[in-house]
Image (tube, rainbow, N blue to C red):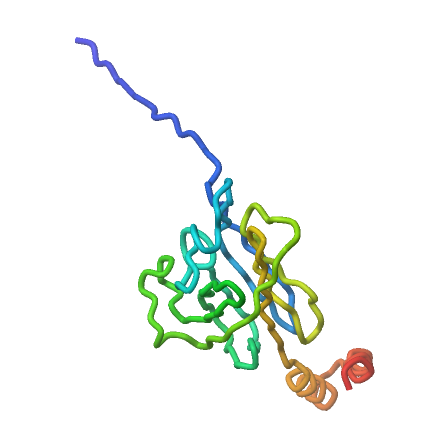
Length: 198
């Protein structure tokens, strides 16, 4: 008797994702901001007012909701946001967008969204771009020690979300502690800090 071992291997074909994921880690203040989102492509479609309806909540990307993770507290539009992970939702309009920072990090897209989990909600003006952007694009811009902007651009529309941080008191406390109690005194760092920020 003969034993035949038959193995059928299923070919695994790797294809590009229709809406590829991008993760950006931006150094900011004395911490980092991590942004993760999926990038849908226009492909000849009308985006805002059609593919993405006006005045309805949007996951701000494709697939899972866009997420923001802060390693240090920040302020967004004047509202303090604690260290941790959040979801970025938006409500696009013709002339302005509503920006929503929400705690529903385990939500899939807008499924599971609860207004009660909003940390902050505010409006920003939208801007018209001269050159269309084919893939949804987000980037940190005008990054300074205490301020930056998160830009969202797609088709011929862009919005800017202001983010700020106050790290001075934390650094001052660390310097004062190290100058008083540390074995290695950070004189150079203290001189740099007070020259730059005080």
